[in-house]
Structure formats: C-alpha cells, structure tokens
Length: 491
Image (cartoon, rainbow, N blue to C red; front, top):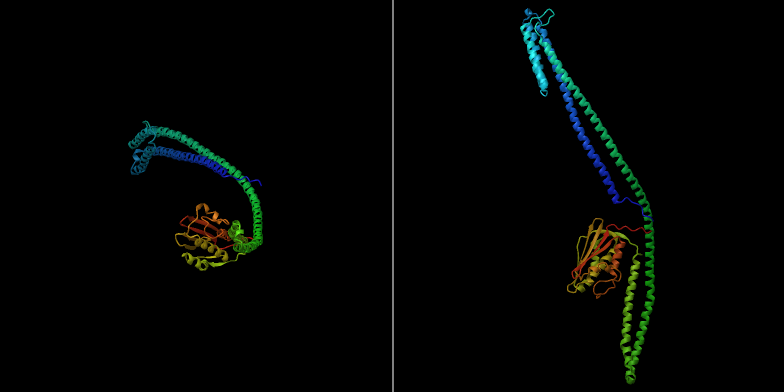
C-alpha cells in the first residue's frame, strides 16, 4: 500500500511564514497609509481653517467699508440740522467701525502687508470721521470740496480684499490637492487590501486543497490500515489459539512417555534390587568371583542414574503441568464482579500464614483499599503469586517483610506488593517475567512460572505489571488494572 502524501510540518511552517509575511507587509503599508492619511487630514483641517480665516477677513473688510460709508452718509446731513438725534445715529456707526478695525487687525497678524494697510485704513477712517465731525463744505453735487478720504478707504479695502481673495484661491487650490491626495491614499489602501487579501486567499485555498487531498488520502490509508489491523489481529488470535491448543496437546502427550519413563525406572529399581541381592549372595558364597567394577555399577552407578532419572522426570512433570496451566489461562472465561480488595487480600494472607510462620516473616495490608470490577480468581492469583515470591526470595540475613497497598489512580487501581528481599538485578527486570526464567542464584524452589503467570493474567484483565528493585534492598511489583474491566470483543 502506497503511503499517502501528507502536509508535513515543514510545509505548514512555510505556509505560516508566507501568510505572516503577507500580513506584515500589509500591516506596514496600512500603517503608512493611515499615517499619511492622518497628516493629510491635519493639513486639510488647517486649510479649512485658513479658508474660514480668509472669509472672516473679507467680511471685516466689507464691514469697515460699510461703516465708513454710513459715517459719510451721516456727515452729509446739513450742519444746522445736526442735533442730539444725529449724534445718537452716529455713535453706533463709529463703534461698529472701531470694532471691525480691531477684528481685522487681529485676523491679519500673520500678514505684515495687510497690517500696514490696516494702519493706513485706520488713518483714512479717522480723517473721514474728523471731516464728518467738522462739517466739511460740500459742493453742489453733494461731494466734499476738499479731497474725499472715503476714496482712499475704498481703495485700501479693494487692495486688501484682492489680497485676501488671492490667498483664498491659493488655499482652496491647496485644499483640492489635499483632497486628491486623500483619494489617492484611499485608493492605494483599497488596492493593497485587495492584493494582500487575494494573496492570502490564494495561498489558503491552495493549502486547503492540499490539506483536503491529504486528509482524503489519510482517510483511505486509515481505512486500509484498520482493515489490515483487524485482519492481523484476527490472524494473531487464531495463531494464539493454535499455539495454546498445540501447547495443550504437546504437554498432554508428553505425559504418556513420561509415565513410561517412570514405569521403566521402577523396573530398573526392581532389577537393581535383584542384582543387589545376587551380589550379596555371591559375596557370601563365592567372594572370589566378584568383579569390583560390577559392585560399583550395582551399588553406586545404577542407583545414582535412577535417582537422576526420577528427579528429571519430576521436574519435567512440573514443567508440563505449568505449560498446561498457562495454556488453559486463555480458555477460562472471566467473570467480572465487584471485589473488595481489602477482603480479598485478607483471604490471601490467611493462606500464607504457614509460610510466614516458618520464615518468621510479616505481611502488612494497608487499608482501606478500593473496590474493583474484575475477575476475582485472576486478581487473587496475581496477589498470591507476588506475596509467595516475596516470602520465597527473602534475604538470608533478615525475615521477610511484605507490604500490600491498593489505591485509585484515575480510571485505574494500582496494587503494589513491596518486600525487603534479596532484590533483582536491573538487567533482569524484564526477563523475570519470561517463562522459565529466574534471576539470581538458583537456590530456591520454583520453575520460573509465577511472574509469567502474573503478567499473563494482568494483560488479560487489561492491565500492566512493572518492577522496581535494588539488589540487597528489596523489590516492589506494581500491578495497574482498570477499575471497570471490559471484556474484549470475542471476534
């Protein structure tokens, strides 16, 4: 099966780097555009203020022109008819002229040329006021016989208005340029956003297509892998069942020749007894006919050989029984039930009292212990095997001290059996769980079956077994089992 092409971590990093670069460029450009827009907006606001300033100047110039004209109109009244009413009419005109002149002076502080004209305009307005106050002689057309100061006022007003109009046109032109710049910047921002968005969209779409294709390929591969795993699992189950049947048949069939060996051994013992009796008779009746080699064979070699045959046969019988027990392990139906581990451990401790009394040892149970839903017989065999091993492999210089604890750990129950025995070398931590394998001096009874049996039971219950040990100090076996045992699918 070909392996699907998947989006690698390097490709994902390259994509993130590309998008980051695009976003960084877009962000920097947008910051620049916003900054430029801010500057242009400030300039725009300044130009608007200047344009308003020009309009105010023009309005004050017009006010001065109008005030002077009114003042002249008041002065044209016949001199003899001037009275309190004329003075009352003239006062607000003079006040308006003075106020307009002050405002114009304040508005034109930034323009020296306009300031000079304002001085001239003020002087001309004062002359017009003095002429009006003095009652200047008028000609037949109603004009002054002397030079009319209003002419100079009007000319100065025209010049100042023209200057301000020129400034106004210039400021309006600058405002249009700033507005055009704002439009250009907004257009550039729109284009930039469109370009960055298009680049990111194109990149993401390409990546999404690759990712989708990768997911589809991975899904197909997973389906094929799941089918392959199910097929391999079924094959392993069949192979395991076949091995168990083979082990059962082989171990069962080995009993027959073993029984024959033991039978012939008994016959050899009987024959050796007959030969021994004949040898004794020959020693009594014809001692000179006895061969020393024959005596050694009958009295030493044959009994020793028979003894080795019997001990080896007994060991073979124990091994065959162990193989039979392990082969039956996978056939026994597990029956989950709620188990109080404290009660179960007390039952195991009762069965170990004789062994503990013989060794002078002590078994301590740390309570309370949790409950577990599992197969009672299997857990009992696990704890019994571990406690029995702890007593069996005690240190020669001290009596065994065994402690059994159990606690909840999330969805599991952790059972620990700790001892102060002779310990296990680190290089043997794994091999002690293999069948017929033991660690350290082979000076204790046993065939190396117990821990293999413990591991097989724990695995069947969905758990694990771990070992911590230090030679000369002791060992701790940790069995982790699920609180709720769930039977595997029998298929």
